[in-house]
View 1 (cartoon, rainbow, N blue to C red):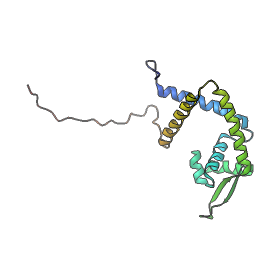
View 2 (cartoon, rainbow, N blue to C red):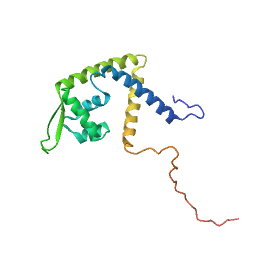
View 3 (cartoon, rainbow, N blue to C red):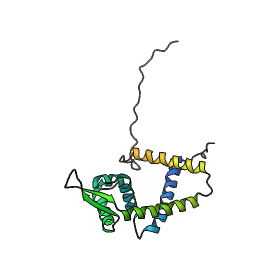
View 4 (cartoon, rainbow, N blue to C red):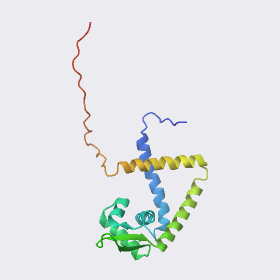
Length: 174
C-alpha cells in the first residue's frame, strides 16, 4: 500500500521536518547522559569501538568536524578515562586513540538504556514495521552520506542552467 500525498504537499519538506523532530527527540534522550557524555563524544566513542585505533584525522572525518573539534572531544574522553592514546606505530609523530574498558562499559550501559527506551516507544509497531523503519532510515543515511560535503544552494540562488537541445530545422512535408 502506498501513501498518496495531498495536493500541494512536498514529501521532501515533510521528511525534513520529521527528521528535525526526530533529532530533537533523540537529543532529549541524550540529555539523560549529558553529565557523562555529549552526543559528539558518544559518536566519537562509537567510532573508536567500531574502528579500533583511530587517528585524529579519521575521527574528525567520522564526526564530520574539523581537527580542532575532534581533538577537544578526544582530549576530554582521554581525561575522563573513556579513551586512551598511543603513538601511531607507522608515524611516531601522530597519535592513535582507543576505547578503554570504562568507555566500552559506558557505551554498553547507554546502548542498553536506549534499546529499552526504543522498545517501549515502538511497542505498538509490529516486527515488519520495525524492519521497514530500520531499512528506510538505513537507506536515508546512505543517501545523505553520498551527498556529504556537497553544499545545498542558498535560497535565492539562481537555478542551475539546464542544457537546451536545439533541433535542426526540418522541412515541412505537405
